[in-house]
Amino acid sequence: MSAIDLRDLRVVYRRKGEADRVALDGLSLQADSEMLAMLGPNGAGKSTLMGVISQTVRPESGSCVSPSSRRGLSIVFQTPALDVLLTVRENLRVAGALHGVDRRAISERLETLCGALGISDRLDEQVRHLSGGLARRADLARALMAHPAVLLLDEPTTGLDIDTRRSFWASMDRIREQLGMTVLLATHLIEEAERADRVALISHGRCVGIGTPEAFRCSLGERVLRIGSTDDVTLDAAMRWAESIGVRPHRIEGSVVIPNASSDLLEQCPIRDASLTLAPPSLEDVYSIRTREGVGV
Image 1 (cartoon, helix red, strand yellow):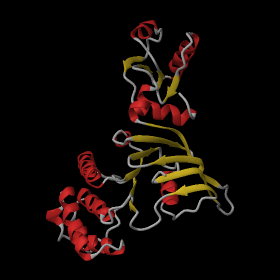
Image 2 (image 1 turned 60 degrees about the vertical axis):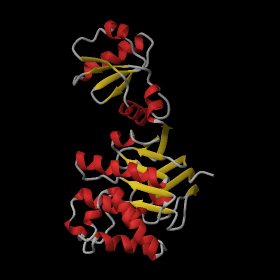
Image 3 (image 1 turned 90 degrees about the vertical axis):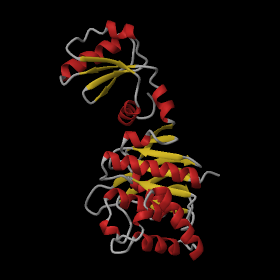
Image 4 (image 1 turned 45 degrees about the horizontal axis):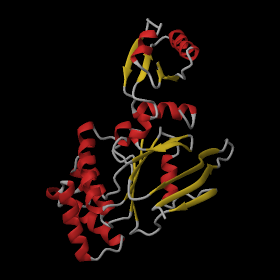
């Protein structure tokens, strides 16, 4: 059985005097001994899904299999779940005790995790004195004190700059190698999803595609033709031209993307008042297409 097994989940938020909001609409996915990224915009249902897995949100229908004990499941939230008046060491000791870890194991895990995360020299500093990146790594250590089978990361790098985000993920990669666990990441950042073993594309409470980043890119062929313009008339003309020659174009925010393109297609394109680019497809291309058009490319 998978560490996480979700089947046909439906969650509806009932609001008095307002229309109900469907947060999850028949969503299904499984994950086991891997990092699975849930990629989607704000409001897509990612945080609600995290709530279902952690048993803080009850679905109207469907089934959810996930660890139910504190030792089996840990969460890193969008903001650090640390007491800012305590030191890093004190926060981690409290976290270990809450997870039922004995004192000797707490000390051993604390030293090992903080060494791997590069915060050993900050153990006796109050959390309020840490930078955002250091606080994030301390919070990751807090979540890992239980050596969980499943780790939930809910937009864990929110508010961090590029260098700090890179440092966080380098630390996360080292810990994954050491502990081995199933990691479920909720993110709207393409570059974070690229780090995952598999990616689930989430849109309006549904999973509209799941696969490896490489497989997603390959689904659009070796290269795509991008026709870019700020003029809707030009983009409409590009769509009509592509359809007239029997290829399937996709309209994506200021551009028309044509999969499985070749240099011959680029030369044939009659749209001259636009930027034309022939390049390998990106995960962002697939994400944009599938979240706008549903399953399939």
